[in-house]
Image 1 (tube, one colour):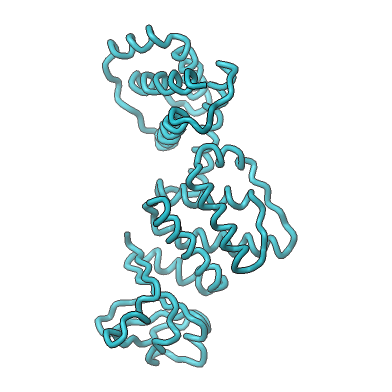
Image 2 (cartoon, helix red, strand yellow):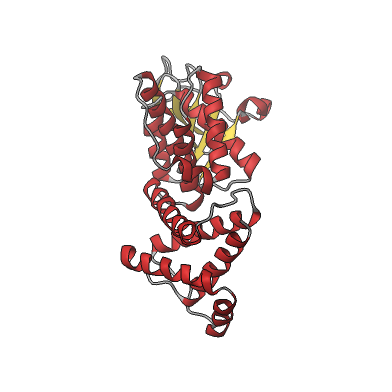
Length: 296
């Protein structure tokens, strides 16, 4: 991690508190400060920057959150964000992110500290204007990213509790995508593209076998997890190397119908993305499809 978040640490440090001086005032409630070791911090707290100037000693009692950025790009983006949105949105986001880490064991890229508060601020502004932004991938995000969607729902509860604003379930799905992005280290557009590819492959399988998925089964979870990483490989133009054709031939003999479905997927991906599936990729996809179809 290049952007560490320390929650209420200063108030717990007591006599161990290291005096800091202001080097930049972002607004009345946020400042940039340095300690005696020249370590730079972004500090949030009501009135921290009010009537202050560069060089003033930071009022320890007013510090609510302490951010210690070590990545220059992330630090600059965060300081810009702090200067343009409500501090409350940053604090709501911090709560959601920490709960996601604790409850789901998520390892997240530092970009989540920029993208999530920015999104929440925009969502609240849209709600204030009476604007409802529909999410066309709502159903698929709920299916493919159960943990992340649950985090999105938790975020809506935090926002309702803190502001009284009830955001639509579409927003839970949008927030889920921010966590997907932070897990794979990609942009929001990449996560959307991955979701669309998963949707299209999933529909090919469902229509080929004329079945409905048992979305609560372990085999479905494994299948969706495989599709997620498969879709990432398509986006990044990477592939499994060709492997043992003898093993693939055994799988084809046992699961000939499922392999026919894989060939249909192969043709689709070749036509739409110019992506050729390796023999190992076809093998793994056949096995996962066989498991999920037979579990229905």
